[in-house]
Image (cartoon, rainbow, N blue to C red; front, top):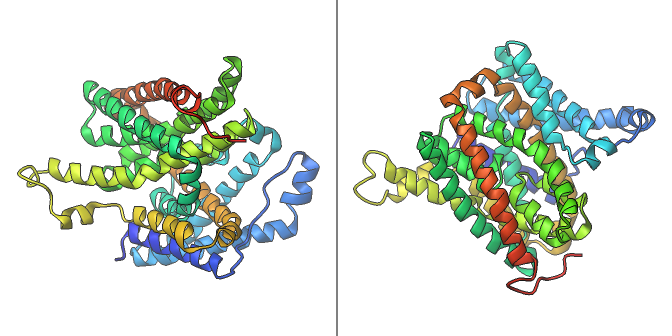
Length: 418
């Protein structure tokens, strides 16, 4: 079981187990509002020591996986050090109160820093060895399963789940159809459609794993998601206010269209507490569908391949193709939903959230390091980008309509989100 997917499950599970056992991971502080506060909180010896402890913990866990994957530890060690330091720089930039108030989150800075390095120098082999974006995101996604607590979802998220199902079904189908019309291959189209309709990078990685897609195409899709997400999470909250959209409706719109949980929270906060709560419910509802879509894609892609056209693919084929880290995501969610007390889950939330953020920050730096502008521009003549933008445009309009119908009190009574 020494595959990247299984190792992500074991490392994510180990992280959860250690926190539940009482282990307190290092949680560096990155929030600051002035140069004095930057020097007095973020750059203090104690906080820098916490940064080093956190980096060492992540590095040791990742190095163990690299060893099992038969990678080069000699190259990985310095490469991960540089990647982690770039991630710390991104978290520090995003920690400024003015920046965070505008909703520009750490993933954008992490991607931009990695992109800057990756496109201004020829990335050496030792740095490429550590640029394993999919692996880091898979670990973060397993830990993210702890945020999907079903009892909370059932209490407040029936409308969110209904909207998520309607968005995923319609937007996925239209984006995939548009990709085919633009002569984009089905492998590319499946990743693009999944990214647009569910939750961006996380969903694209699940789709890529389900269909065993080309990693260069995955890098293209993740880059598109981040490039488009940056202006959306700044502009959309202002549109909610300019057009006097009700707060709860606006929150449901933000939650259904923005592609990362952090951007959803930040954008919702820019509107109101009620908007933020509605946005989070909708986003969590969409995240639940990652496993379902990954399974359906696995079955569909098995049927498309030679040998699978004459009948349903065997259970063995589906199991072999299914992205195993999704199982870790679901298992973590079930653990926190049904086996832990609400207090135990609440106590573990902050330390696990800090670990998830660090893994994601490292992952998005790696995405930037792996991305080449020249390849993005030239890949299939820019047609995948057009399909993505078309799908996102449909997503924005369709989700706003659904938000009004479901969260505007048109069809059903809406619960309070204050």
